[in-house]
Image (cartoon, rainbow, N blue to C red):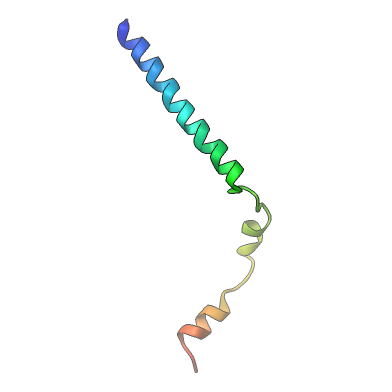
Length: 55
């Protein structure tokens, strides 16, 4: 039965670490740009191909 108390404590500690990392990422601006990634796939990367194979 004592192992359950240990597992609950460890899981709560891990959950707090993940919650802290999520809050840090939100405050750091990780999730600010919501539109560009969805539209990026619609554009071709022709300029990159021309730079690699000139002529």
